Image (cartoon, rainbow, N blue to C red; front, side):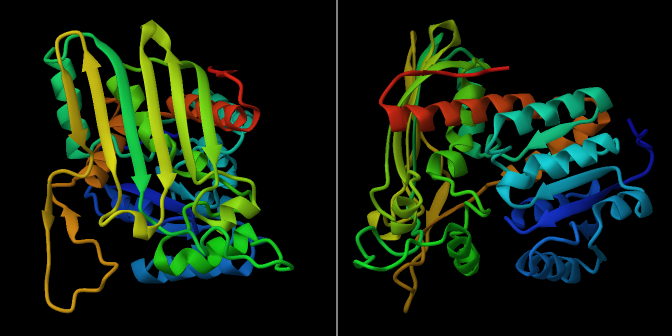
Length: 374
């Protein structure tokens, strides 16, 4: 492992591709413990990826290198922020780990378990830290976790999460006429970048379970004391969006979880279109213990803002007191220091990936599926 000089602040961070979402490297850059030094990607990537990387590098006044290994060698990095196409997450993170660099990586960890396992092996062998991006520091999650730790609900028996995003994902289901070609997944994601609905960036089509499932499953894992999921049963469909139907992936799912310690988990998840909800969506947690129960809205606290000539599709309710990104960056810094564990590490995210893949299989087969945990 590369020795980190604890007296040198801030940590020097390279951005290994920024074509999926830029919120992750922006959050790292906003924290005083970190400094972005460069953006890097492989030279053989498509032109649209280089364009996005160059724009981000120009905005932050840092160089863009079309050579990942050269970036590692020339910039004396301590850590990397990894946010390429989802299927490349582990590939770039493994190269960082093998260079002794600490890693903060966008979700989902991967679309393949074998890639997750290779990354975990590289992390363990090189003794580096890895934080997988999540939403576990939202105020509602902090409040729910405190209630459990203080014993106000007693022993938790079941956790349910509603996780509906009221976002569009291209043409609605049924809009394709006879003879029209199926919607190309990657091209749809590239076109969607402008309005922020490109959650499944990559050549591999990903349904809502794969794109966003890590968030509610990370909630359930956190509030369930780290209990792993043993078996899942799911119902999945493409109900709202033509791109999902054309590419045989879900935009709506229900999942039941058989977990360790007799805990029962469940979630309903979907990208339910902008017309389906007046705000960002219905995202709630339901917890039942032997001493009490709790229902908590993930969006709270929030304020409602109304003004003259307000656009019809602008969300009226807006979150306040949300320090999730800052707290994640702080958690990453402390994990590098060795004083705190990542709130979601690669092993935890890998098992969430296994749960998601089992749920996708269950949705297609109609059978209960065992989860391949590690």
